[in-house]
Length: 88
Image (cartoon, rainbow, N blue to C red):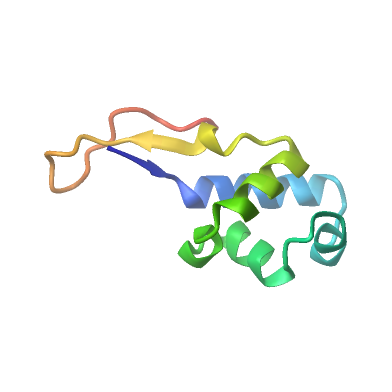
């Protein structure tokens, strides 16, 4: 079983935007992804990941591969014990 580590991906998206000195408004103009979706994605909010399109678009814009933030979990444990770490 696998899951996207939304918090780490969100932190990476925000860090990339800030490193480039971009406001969310500018990213919206350049990508077509709404400001509210960018905000939710950067906060790791589940709603920001409802559409994979937005994650793929933002990842491509910042040259971040969202697949680097997928964790594998053991499906038979109630706690979802992590088997592999995500990229830092």
